[in-house]
Image (cartoon, rainbow, N blue to C red; front, side, top):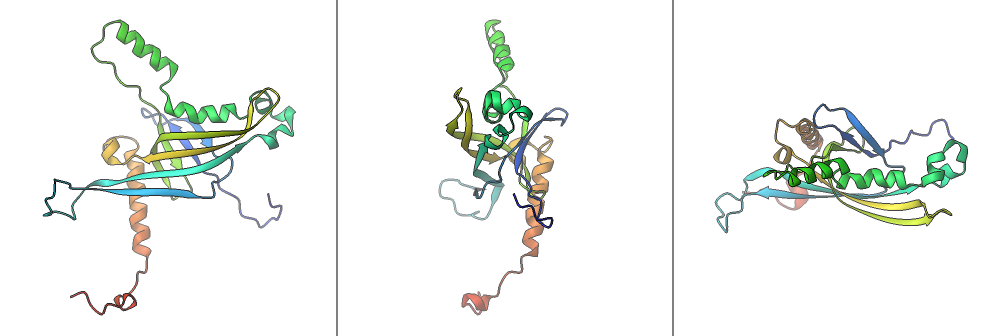
Length: 218
């Protein structure tokens, strides 16, 4: 880390888990190091009716957007100061990995409740609802997401086989108003995310037909 007083403060990326009921923050998962690359794939949701080409420009919903990124989690620096970092000494990076992994599981309490409902002969067992996850990558990119997949490669271990360094690959599905419904707490954040894109697009200077070798399109 640079010691120059004029060095910019590095902003970290992360995931914020909030209650879908009252909006309270349940957990903040900060990525230790900002990933060097961020991949995004957008897929249009358009009318597809078996070859009818009468409405090829009609969009039925916001695009499906998938974000993928790789991050590194490392406890090496913390282990240099064991008195101040007892969790890292006792468990390595297991807590950080577990915070990500539990985003893909119903809680144990939810599973036990579903089992009790099944044992009682309930005809309808409600699927477990997870906290609302917000992917935060600067103030301009705060968007509701669902963690679709997580790949973990543990690289180094301490004497007790606790992992102390790992690379994680996350695949996040952006949740739009089409997924959440306009009345959901996360829909307002998606709309702000979309409106921010529209404002930025309006700032794009664009080009001229002459630069494309086309005098006119008529």
